[in-house]
Image 1 (tube, rainbow, N blue to C red):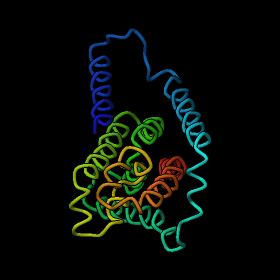
Image 2: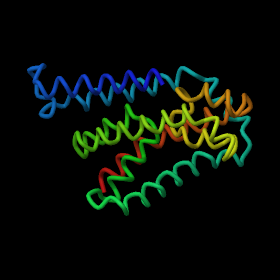
Image 3: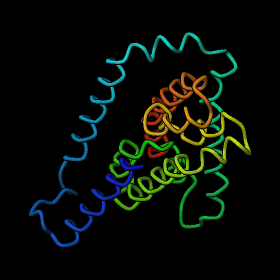
Image 4: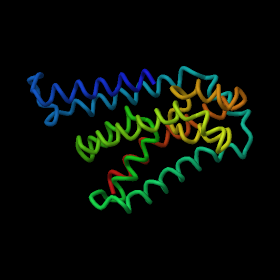
Length: 200
């Protein structure tokens, strides 16, 4: 939760800087966000490469649970497609691109900003932060009414980091490996799906 609030705070601060021209530099006409994205992808690669335990723990998963990330991705995209029917000012691909962030706000919002502009990037940022916050706040209710896998699916790409502690508390320690695997696979899909829907 604290990390999400910090991200939102920096976004608001950046918006204020942009509105009042506090920084005498036009970010829209530069490739700065592209270089920031490259640096972010590099850091993601380092974090995965530095944690061999994550890769080892995947071997202990049952074959049925391997389908959980696939079902999270399919369910999210299906939900976005349904919502797009009620948003006449947004295309299906715009809604699918935003949904393809799966809670990974730092990466997906930069991608979408690059392809679709700052407005869509902002929508993606808020959408993905909201997904993370809902998981953090509602995990006990999700377990109670929908089962122990529900907060994992709801958390999307965040289940290997920010929402992992609450998932461990509410779903149980036996679901930690599932949560990490789920987060890793959904996380991995984000750059491919977001760029695919932004390019269509």
